[in-house]
Length: 193
Image (cartoon, rainbow, N blue to C red; front, side, top):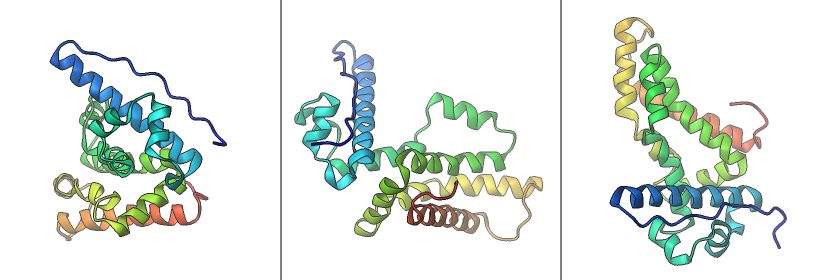
């Protein structure tokens, strides 16, 4: 029996119009992911089955497997979300005072995921990174081109002073963030990110 019960709202089916169905599918995917993350945090990733996720999310296994390949794809989906821009994050990015602030926003989105996941579930992501090339590093490095462009703009405007190429700065900064997340996990979240 579960020590912590994760309660998830029932999903409502929307079957009219392509946009409504697409929006409903996105909301359902988000709802399942949120329920799964709650279970993973409460019970540990390896202690939660797809059946338990389906039960908590009030969906059938066939609906689950229509949206996700398995438990791992839920984590991949959540980690990849910072690459997708919703209206709020796009507005915040556009309204940033300068490109250095935009660089910080890119990394802050991944730190927020780690804080939401907590050190144990984030550690699971690092372990998965060793087993498969997908994961945190791939998701963070997916933004390298944007980071390099922003770093180049910062150098041109004098916000940062460096002779290093922006592409190298991107890799260094990304690896530093990943390292800090790793240390944070290894110390069970005993310092603030």
